[in-house]
Length: 294
Image (tube, rainbow, N blue to C red; front, top):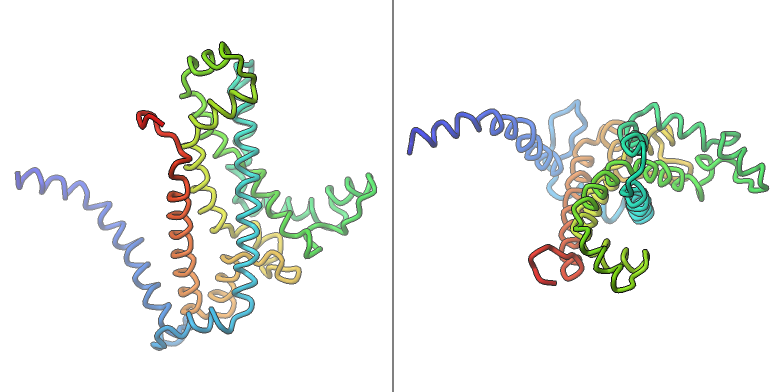
């Protein structure tokens, strides 16, 4: 028995060492730094909870970043999931070239986090860009989305929604698992396409919807590259694209306040964990699991 346990720990040791050095160790170091005044050049100075106090009571840009991030999450996640589900429903029907269509719709998810794509997105939505000229041709003048505070965040939301390929693939896999007998029985009862979607597809797909919702919400809270590139790292205009992660980056690597940035990182971790718990608790009674008899 001891020999078997020893072999198990031996095979687990690379993961244990990696998790300790690359995950647990940095997290503990970040927690310590969040309680210090640290600027990368001088030794950390212990200040207790002062970073958290300043963050919640004196830093107006912190609350601006929180508001911008909440709006970004509330708009981008539902839009992205609706697009992903709609396209998955279309691709679930037998048709020629289905694999090609799946690859084409999935491709933006592979490119979405790249700097080059964010640069293209910025050029498209800038003043005089493709989107600006197309809208001007139909009589809508915006002056460029990324240059106007009221439209800049919408450009980031559009960039996020365009990357719906990953949740689409997961939705498609879930749709393939729904028994065809349920659709046949519903059709015999006279249910039309909309009724079958509401009474069969969505209930049977509810665990997958919850999974995608949790995953995309976490990703949305962590969004950084698009906001950084589109706003040239400033979060403008007028802090309209100042996402939480971008402001964290500014405090850490522009102002060299690593202790404050570490405190912001821990606040983000707690908020994301809390939102995830709320999503799971809120989904009780709404998610159908096979074998539960509901």
